[in-house]
Amino acid sequence: MRALGLVVLLAFAAHAEAARLETFAARSSAVATAPIDSSPASAEPRAGGAEPASAPPAEQPAAEPDAATGAARPRSAASSAGVEPAASPAPEAPSPFLAWVDDTLHSTLRWEDGSPRLFFAEQLDAGYVYVRGRSFIGYGKPHDRWIGLEVTPMFWMGALSGFVGLSGAWRWAGFRAGARPVLSLDRAFLPAADSHQRLEFDTAHGSAKYVALEAELSANLPLGPGVLQLLGSLTNVQGVPEGLHVFEEGLRIMVAPPWVWRARGGYALHVVRGKQHSVGLVVDVMGVPARNLVQVRVGVVGVVKLSTRLEARLSIIPAVYSRDQLGFLNGELPELGIRYTFATGK
Image (cartoon, rainbow, N blue to C red; front, side, top):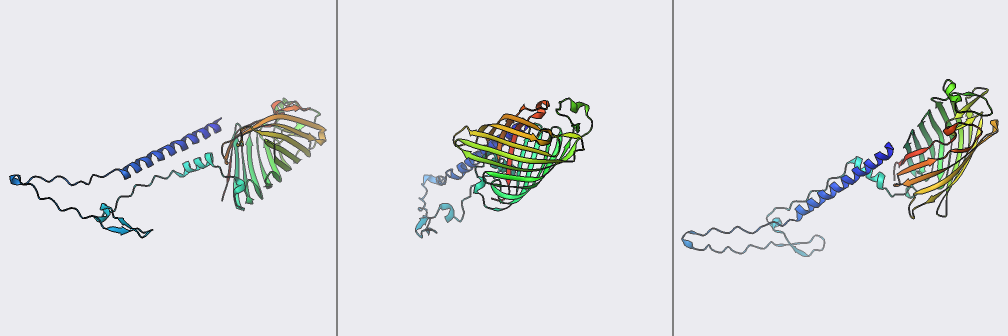
């Protein structure tokens, strides 16, 4: 909620700055166009009641040629007197911070319209009990058609993790392959069992540390009034002692090493014509061959596209079938926050 409050605060600041600049420009224009009283003061009467001699008519300013057309145009009185009219002051430019806020909240540029280039890009997710910053160095059109290196530090309630590997995308399809080291802050390895209970973590001591090697393919295919979302991954868990199981923090499932597979499908419906706001249904199926375990999740996802760079996200995907009784740990980590997307160049 703090992250969403920050978005509202930034939007209010940008609106206030725009209103201030409009008021300043209006005042500057009014001063520049105000008429100047150039009528001569009335002459004082001469002694004896004699009327003053009428002054000769003022010499009209000579015409000067127009620089563009060559035609004669009259010179202003100020120019004839050798005095140039004062230029109206230029409106004050917004501060770099407010310019960034305005671009973040109102940008309509599309990533696919950019030019191929070397770039640095960022996809920052921040919300309730999680922070994830995906950093990319690559070549192509960032967030659209590109290939490069991904480095992603991650923090969420109960664990620290990260990802280092190759990543890329081609329009609606994406891939990533690399290593994900994990440090569980309050969950230890558990003795092997056919089924696990949530209370086992309360009596076990220590912190589990392991490395997950994973490869992932994804696709977001336009279909009808929405998008068909597909994802598949294969994970190899290393570093788990013999005879023990580990709670895999990224996939959120109890694992007997080494393999975990995942298949996910969903459909996101665009709820406003011409906008990218969406609400969708997701089905997530995972399996651990060494435990002969299958786990199924079903949930909803929602996205409000505020601009090209900023969106608000919500997902709730609990487990509906699993042999393990881990409560909310069986479900995917809930998401309630914002996503900010950035890239260098144009």
